[in-house]
Image 1 (cartoon, protein in one colour):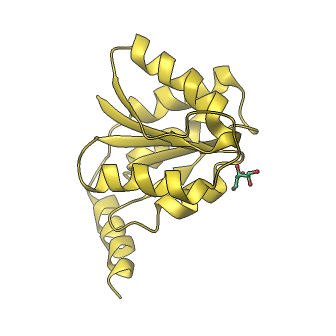
Image 2 (cartoon, rainbow, N blue to C red):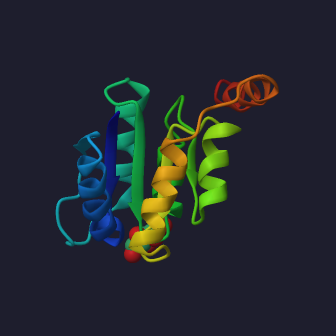
Length: 146
Ligand code: RB5
């Protein structure tokens, strides 16, 4: 799978760790930054990954900031993006199964590295169920056009 990744300084270390993990699992990762622990503003990186997902440069995105909150808020402002910030496996799976989230967000200061790997696996291995959930997603996306 082709996956776009991005973070601010608060998520940088976790991004690097998960990037390596995904590459060992034969995923192709496009890294939209940031590229160091120097302080940066998370909206820029949330927007970059969200644009890449919306433009179909990558299939899904995985983003991190300190909490996962700010960067997911920024990403979800881009048309067509549903970013889900999660800190446990069940929500990660449901983010795909029910919400068809196209971006997964995590907090680099919230989740440990092993948990983050399990979260990523739960998200990437899940499939959107469609059906009644599609109708609800359509309603979410209609809000963008109001
Ligand atoms: C940066 O210190 C921090 O505010 C940011 O990483 C994130 O947690 C914001 O939601």
